[in-house]
Length: 172
Image 1 (cartoon, rainbow, N blue to C red):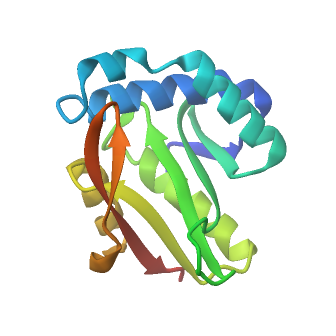
Image 2 (image 1 turned 45 degrees about the vertical axis):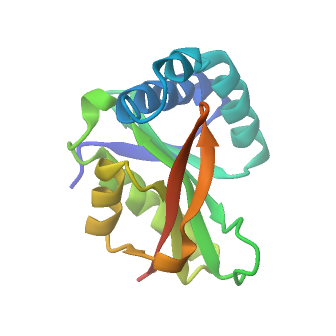
Image 3 (image 1 turned 45 degrees about the horizontal axis):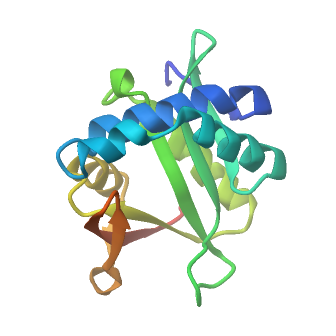
């Protein structure tokens, strides 16, 4: 039994989601992208994005709470990748407050996303992860995701190029 409660996000959760998103990026990508870029990440812009996502249900967003406080979130829906079947879902984002890393919040969020994707009729799920984000790769691999070696692509983040790879797993 998880110590975290996971529920669908509401528009009121957007600020907490944005704060977690920015804090997690600033911690996870320190040394991988320029400090100036990490410092420039805007809670206000992220809040607007996540508020709209929650209101439009694209992606579906759930939050993990502890004692009523949001400590993590996951966004999931059908895969955005061209050519994937409609039965393929995607984790669009999954983040926990850095103070809650390695405490089970990620697993609670993954369980909720998996259940939501099953309800949507998905049989597979994918996630894109930066290759140098070892913590995220380890988390997803422990959750049963496997790397799709031919999927690697380069994306520009803060003026530097980062390699991303898609991971996938069956939903069981």
